[in-house]
Image (cartoon, rainbow, N blue to C red):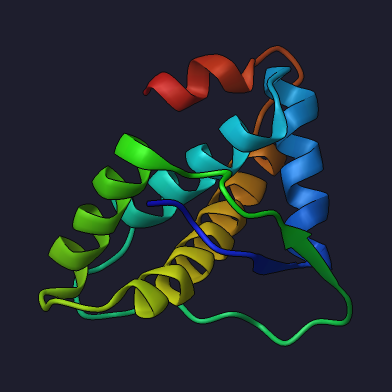
Length: 123
C-alpha cells in the first residue's frame, strides 16, 4: 500500500522547500513530517481544509508507503473517528499535509535568529 499522486498547493510547496532548507533533509521526509505535524495538531472533528491557491505541485506516488502508509492511515482514521476507504485516505493525507505545512511555516517564521528548527521539532 502506498499513497497515490496528490497535488500540493504552490504555497505548500514553498513551505516544504523552506522546511527542507531549515532541517537539511530529503523531500519524502519533509512530506511525512508535515503530515505528522498536521495530524498531531488537528482538533478532532475539525477537518483541515485547503485554501484555494494558484498552481499545484504533484507529490509523486509511493512517497508514503508500506508501514508508514498504514501508520498514517490509522492515525487519520483515529483522528476522523470513522473508517474510510483508500481514496478518502489520500484526500485526507493532502489536507493534513497542507495543514501541517501551515503550522511549520508559522513556527519557522517565529524562530529567533539563534534558534534551530531541528530542535524546535523535538519540543
